[in-house]
Picture 1: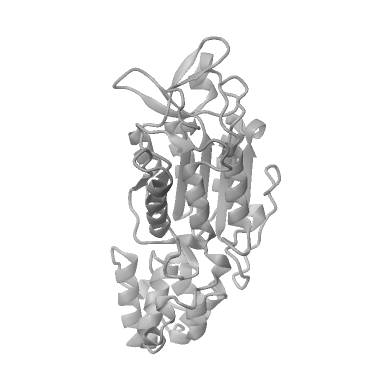
Picture 2 (picture 1 turned 120 degrees about the vertical axis):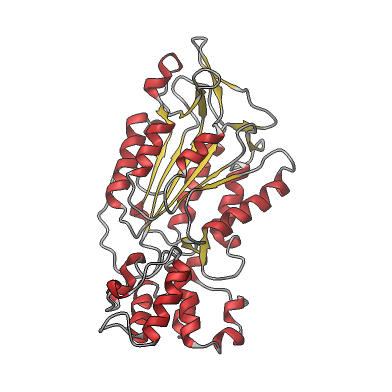
Length: 376
């Protein structure tokens, strides 16, 4: 499991394999200090997601870039510190995942309610000062500079067949459990930001009796381990992952749980991790002779749209390849930007030092294990 206390500085080597641009903060609380506990699956969820993310055979994240906070480690100050450290170490071209498994709570009067993230040290007698409000969480996420940020919320767990709608403690205090729909929307605000929640606001996130993981995380883990890469591209992509989860959960628990996806301003189906360590399926449509025989410019365009969905400015790919961004026109989507940029390049524009070979070479340096790039 990834170290939850120490951060090792990582110098990104763009020639290395794996997914060095991936960062994650994973939080799980089952055994609260003063509030009713949750199934052990909550902790397993974090441990297993961390293992999938850091496995070179699955997602390829650098282990030092994946931080876990479990039970006693997941205090309010520690979670806020973890988010602050994540904002410090993740750069604009990185990919960030934040995962929370534990209690969610609802505070306030009807019509003026707010959702809170319940940390291990939360006290129902002083819940507003001992939990993390949706505004605090949203502000912490806003400080993360990465252009690709995905938040997972697996809260309000139902162990076995049912769960109380209220959180309780030994002093007689109680709090309505759950997460509000408008909170999901709030946490997904911003360009390149998305959220996946385990269930709708009026549902519970189920854990089968004796199961190692919650229903949601069972589907998430299968997706991260490659099942969501249905095209065999070598990448787990955000839309593909949610599509897989939303298809799988009804198979596990029909009609009772529906995952939620929220996104405010996504330009494309961006990758969040490697699939099977970046190995592309030999049966992938992208490996068929038709694609191999495709015009190299068209093939490169398809690959660049996939790997750099925000366009030539993404990860400074154009500049690093010797291009001049000032020679390119602005376009509202990454796909349109790539189409126009490559047309300009084909006609001899885009900068004095950039050409097909330098652009391809730079992309190969970033994704040295990408089979389609190798074919070019």
